[in-house]
Image 1 (cartoon, one colour):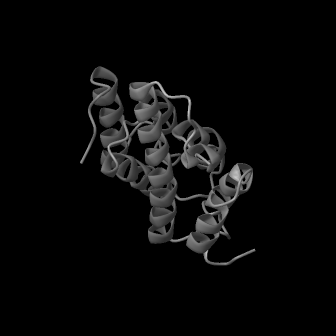
Image 2 (cartoon, one colour):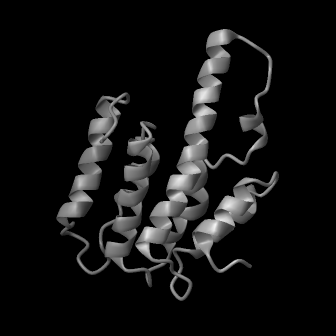
Length: 164
């Protein structure tokens, strides 16, 4: 496999039927022993979310114009938030070997990427992930953990709100 994860994801995004491989690469980037550095993860989620944003915009245009044409964006691999939450970020919940600060940093980086592209965060899925307390102090969440929970609550109250 291509060792440069950004080049690999860029390559896979150009291929049809590569969704499961992309999700597997993203999941592996979070695992101990194969863990990527945060800037690499940031670039990867930026690429994925840019394609996702393009898809969402094409959907909105198609709904507005009521045309049946299928632009090229429909032939690309789309990794949406539910894919990331269920297939990639679930590793963060299940693996106690992953440092808690790394888990939080990855989630914040993902939220940043969504917000930068003005994609509303799906709060319920995020809430499930952030509702986990650090295993070392189960009754005392960190300030970052509390921040993520507050973001989820604010988003639930105002679903059109995005974070810049």
